[in-house]
Length: 292
Image 1 (tube, helix red, strand yellow):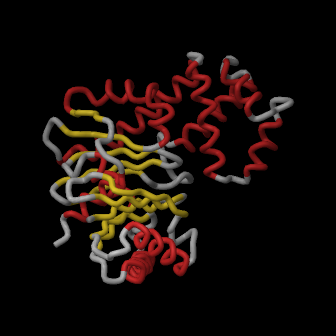
Image 2: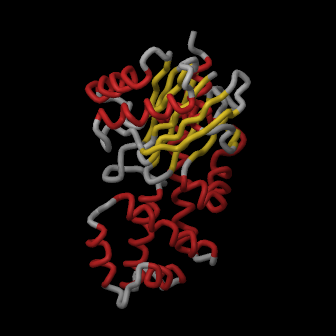
Image 3: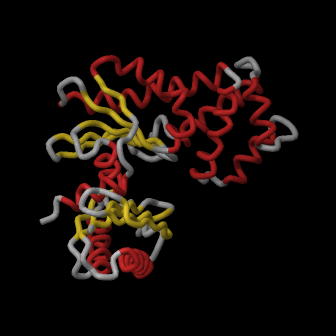
């Protein structure tokens, strides 16, 4: 028996598998992110989940946790949490992005782009993981939902000024943000208090406009595809063609029909662009199976 755990910033998904990769049971618990919960609470969440899925203590565990990155102090805290939560159960601990790439490419070498609230691209080759992007919303995260929303709101301001001709996007933003007059957008944004999640959530408006063939909304998605291509292209330098590339995250789920065709055009024949083969928790299961 195996347990695959995807510990993201908003929830912790745990799935038990048999030796053939068949799902036995799955549960969703609150986030066990060290920056969102106390260490004690993180231990309680992980312990409760594995004991529910594996009361006999016979499973090997693969886990990917948000926050398990470059900071040595935080890495050590997370490692201690897992040791206390899993006790004698054997486990392998990686970042949530590594299990995502393992799942998306079924454990094979290649490149995965993750575009949700933020964005990052990762490559896996012969066990070595490399990254590009992922600098956060203040410094980058190009092609992310936050980036799309900010681009969209900038277009609105330009349309208000007359620097751009008013399109459907202008009317949709006024309607969806409940603006009485154009300049209420300033108060609206101030009330969001720079909350990246709330701002990123506004990206759906660009999707509404794109469905109406709004040229400015479509242009934003094309620009997003161009930014995502830059990440992939940089990571591809150490690969031989054809290179497997997959994609994960809310941006692709909600706007993939607008972004993926542009991305495919730029990638050309050198890349094999495919939907994710498996989920991140299955990627954790792949890693758990390698435990001896």
